[in-house]
Length: 234
Image (cartoon, rainbow, N blue to C red):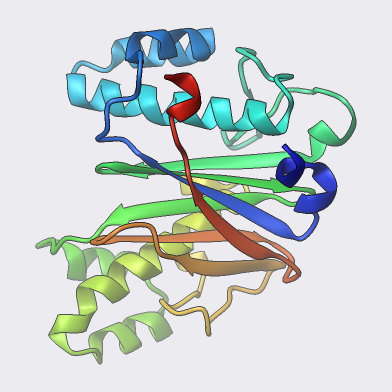
């Protein structure tokens, strides 16, 4: 695929939206796509819906990566960073510069792929939670919390989840994930606010009632969204 060539990705971050609720063709065959550790983790999931979502999301991520890597990843297990972030095993050449990240919520997964820069992605289903204000006090910076509390009630749910996705994307991009306090990142809920520390975070439109964001190092990149299709596996 010419559009997946390394040169074409120099200033791009690719986002693939995967609909988990849809039945992929030959779902049973997707087990063979996964690495041994991934299959073991799927086996430990007791709820069939949770297991199905894991299988489809992780199989799609691996198939997408193998498109970029011309099959070099295969079923090889991922390596892991010092704080547990999955990374590619050594593959040689430009392939060792490819980074990826996977997030899922409800019926959707979001796969991010970048070359030469770390990337993090998050997606959340927007729904009112009784604990939202308490969580906001825990994860928002003082400035973010003051701005959040000044919003009209009808605006708070979207603002809260958008801010959450932006913080999670930043935490995943820098490799610290949930080992780092989300209050470390002051990102607001619009692209006007940026975290500094060499990262840029951008909001994404994926589906109704879902909020998402992607973060990557540098400012010289654009996000390119696309939908994953199982047509090639039918």
